[in-house]
Length: 367
Image 1 (cartoon, one colour):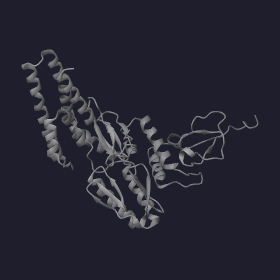
Image 2: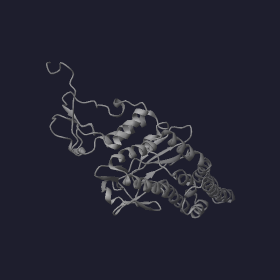
Image 3: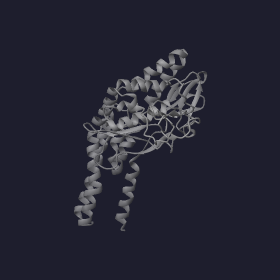
Image 4: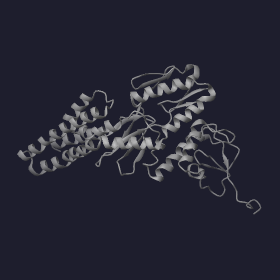
């Protein structure tokens, strides 16, 4: 391998790393464009770095716009505020310990607990919400949560957020694709055919012109839409001088939005299969919590999801179906759908979730 080929391989590795972005540890990122179906992916929550989890964005052209969505991180309970920590564990804060404050994108619900929010605006938004919940009587907190949850599940708002991300990044993505093709297509072919001569140098000289235009487009977009991008001049300098940064300039713009919708709010943008799969997963996580029993009433998040599914014309068989079981199964876990031969013990894998009995056809016992 020549020095030029080695340098080129290192540059390709830099671009590969640039496609890896840190998102919120509980975030789901949707990728798509206007007129296309969006795909929703969850970050690698088991690996947390500075309050975020790594996630690969669209690697190859056509480059897509990206929208970050968040499930409910804060849930009011009779005993206190349930907080989904970035390490994957849930923390219960007594209401007297709830003293929310924020510094930039860092939200402090109370005590020593600190959560890194996607933007400073979202941190300030949740600071006010938590203050309102704390000051409400216990019987009104559930209603306040259901109101906030309904707003986060607004499909029309989520559609506008996605369309704005696609519109704002249209030219940045187009120029990013051109920089990508010039860097990884045109220039290598020119170098292979002509070696180190005048044609190759002219081809290489075009690349800084493209990256400079990309930096200008980035600053223009940030200013026009008043996006809260920190250190934008330094970022623009990186776009102007480093092609692998310039290719991914649109990601910084599309992932910057104030109010993050719930993942299920993307109903109109996802395929029906993807939406139903997500609905089933989130319903099981909200409804069949560790220690669940059939006599247990709906939790606030389960009630919010149930209302949303009703609005979206989903039946219980759609979001909470019975699994296909072997003939000898006597019960099954409603959370993980594992079959059981005995009905007396709960599902230990799901934290003691009570089993559901298999409905035997009439006359099977007699047979």
